[in-house]
Amino acid sequence: MSIPAFRTSYPSLSISHPDDAARRGAAALQSRRRFLLGLPALAGALALAPDADAAPAWRADGWCATWGCAPAGPPPSASTMSFGGQTLRMIVRTSIGGNRVRVRLSNEMGSAPLLIGAAQVGLRSSGQAVVAGSNHPLSFGGRTAVTIQPGSPALSDPVFFQVAPFSDLAISLYLPGSAMATTIHRDAWQANYVSTSGNFAANTSFTLSRSIASWPFLSEVDVDGGAPCVVAIGDSITDGQGSTGNQNRRWPDYLARRLQAELGATAGRIGVVNRGIAGNRLLLDDPSALLAGRDVLERFDRDVLATPGVRAVIVAIGVNDIVYASGTALSVMRDDLIAGYRQLIARAHARGIAVLGATLPPMEGFVYYTAARESVRQQVNGWLRSADEFDTLIDWDRVLRDPAAPTRINPGYNSKDWLHPNDAGYQALAAAVPLNELSSLLV
Image 1 (cartoon, rainbow, N blue to C red):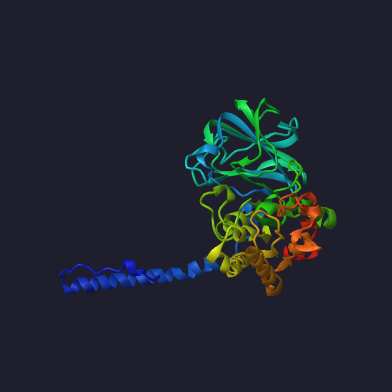
Image 2: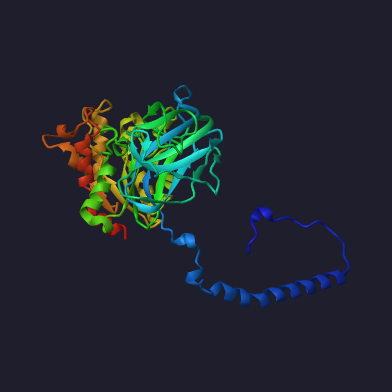
């Protein structure tokens, strides 16, 4: 083994008898002989293939994410939600089912320890109520309470809980002390519920203090069964802005339903995880808007590569880089975005993950639209169509644009701000994903 250069040092000067050197040389020779005699046994041990029956049991678990969001934050102090001795019940929709469930919580953007006094997962019946008898306690390393240190996530122990595809799960967290929602996914497009004071995690229902439209502290739900997973990463269009709340009508929701409807229950058992964040960019963070999340280049490893079961990622990002740029930044935006896309492709391929790209949607009429920004969007889309560097390209610009005015979104798909689609537009985006190509990339 070579010694790092910074470990090199000169020995201190000393005077010794010549016989000392001879004795040291003999001792070193004997040591080398013992080492060499041990090599055949070591080599034999390394060459022995482990018996299949002796493989660790956890290698056969085959976890796959069935739901996920991307944590962001912290929010500005004045708008940070706080909880004190209350139960938070959050609702998520599974994309695939399984026989065991585990939940990932996050204090990654926090600056203080987060104490979870109790946690449960069950089937939501309606509102904040769960189906009687469906609630299951979650543990963390065998303990029912867990303290999550700042900057860290926590993954629950698996719980035996048979869950069907497209189930509404209720994840309940009892927060016994004061907890600040510094790690949060702001735009859930789903009502979640906060109790009055008390631990109601195991209760079928509770008295409501307020409802919230975000997911604090929650980032993923996994199921067993060895299914592949597709991660959708992007901005507000992936996050679902403009879709109908509490209806799961974001384009990844439509894609999950389409996979099982068209490919069947077996071939279509593909987890779909939504890692979109409204306001998110590919290249840079906005230090004044941390709820828009870290840029995709920064969060790609956490939100894509670390997702259990991931085999493919659909990348739809770049509009916010363009609309918030001006001057010199805008003049080099095409080349910078291309360099960013190439980084995502290289990093995904290094892990054996396929990458599907998407063209940037029409935006004339949007509040940040200018002719100069439109020119960059067209240049980027031109490169996406001609370069053939993504494993598959989905041309969402052509799907959404008005045939009579191609730089504008089709009025039938417009959610009224001339950038974000409505429910019909999101369904059209999901319908444009080539399922045969996608399923072949998942093998």
